[in-house]
Length: 289
Image (cartoon, rainbow, N blue to C red; front, side, top):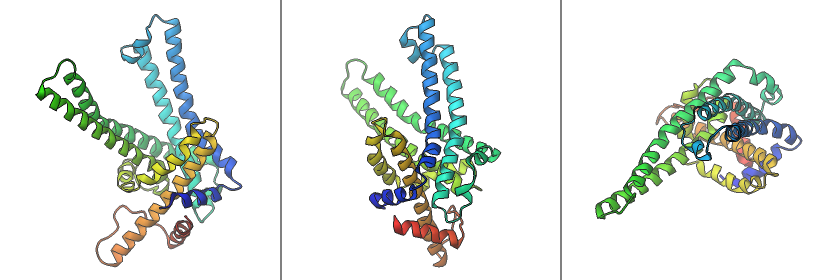
């Protein structure tokens, strides 16, 4: 997929609707930043009014700090996940042929019980799976640190080098998994009948071999986002381009599964079922992008 053409076509979709789309896309990002700043503010209050050293914030032994971190993290997940779902819902409406999702009020989508249930459940599953995937990197990192503490003989040097190498590989695998989870909110919207846990697992297979598109989009828009002032524009364009790429990837999978079924080599398993009308819409978007 040519990222340049994908960006060009996504910008055409944003014409005459950029301001509204930007407000919706910035809601989850603003919520994330708000609760992280609130958590940092609580830490500052603890340091100012309490008899704590700054090093205690990194030890994890302060009960007040752990309580503040847990509360802020819970509030962040509960609020940011549904807002991210709504942003993905609105972006999907921009590339859909029908106008149902395009003109449906976001407040109505946000207040649905199913929206809260699926989005929060998917966010929790991504956190749990991400922590499990990070465990090997932590294990090898701690092992390498313990081995390299002091003078090393040939055997310990060999073990330390292997621990560092395996730790680096584990971190790369964890980062690859985190990139795959970027598609979860968009897949929740595309496949409303799929459970949250199944969507999280499906996103890993769905993004296999396609994470380079997201990395190239990040390489284009990240320099603009580092200027702080360019975050609203760059983040909105990034989400729109990535949403469009998800539609194109889904179309590709559906046509591949259709060809497999027609040729008698197998049947569709996890590919979403869409009407021929939607397939024509995806095909038009793919041809333009």
